[in-house]
Amino acid sequence: MKIIRTPFLLLLAFLCFTGPTYAHHLWVAEKNGVYTVMRGHMPDQGTPYAPECVKDIRAYNSEGAPIAVDRIDGVEAVSFKTSAPPSAVTLICDWGYRVLTTRGKKFMTRREAVKAGHTVIEAFFSTQFAKVLFDDSEAALEASGLRLELLPLTQPAKASPGSNLRIKVLLDGKPLPDAALLSDSNLEVRSDANGTAAVPIEGTGWRLLSLRHKIPVQNDPDRDYHLLTTFLIFEVK
Image 1 (cartoon, rainbow, N blue to C red):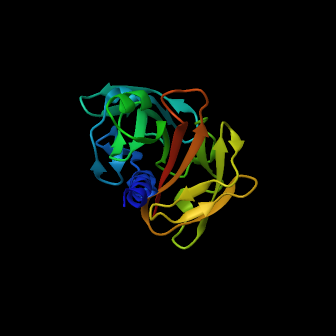
Image 2 (image 1 turned 90 degrees about the horizontal axis):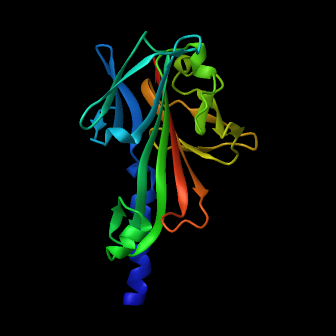
Image 3 (image 1 turned 180 degrees about the vertical axis):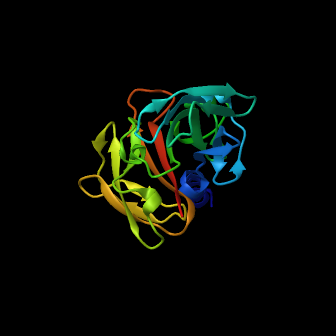
């Protein structure tokens, strides 16, 4: 029985902790002119995190020009104010090392996990990016330089339920073909040879599109790959 059960448990652990449903979202919430970097499940299931994980916050006006950001590090989250209401905000967060083991996901390096007696299925480093659009300005259609980015080719704010939003997937500024985009209901659409995809708009309100991409890492004792996850958040009225 052990020969049969062990592969099953390995597969079960892998599926439970790598599927898109279990991934944390990254977005921005606004209240009374104060913006908060949120991690958890949009729109209102935020979880605490270490503020030092937030590596970069940038805000842009309606012409796509940068505006000043006043960062405020709290105990379990990062907030910020801007010199004017932003049309777009971009985020970069390094969440650190993770391992998938037969006993679930652990927040440690491979060597730490092995030392602790875990059986490691795979090990990686997690970085997330987000672009949050607050209106239909030019900033929405300009690449912001995120390493992994979902670039709208038409205005997301002008989309309507039942229509398709054309997206170009960029990795290091270049089109990424055959990339699996996910809607907020986990509908998957793959990019074509030019890195372009047409993603269905499934409803009104704040919408979230996401993409995960693994970059293999060679000769690193603590990780097999660098996991990049990017989000595009916008409102459909």
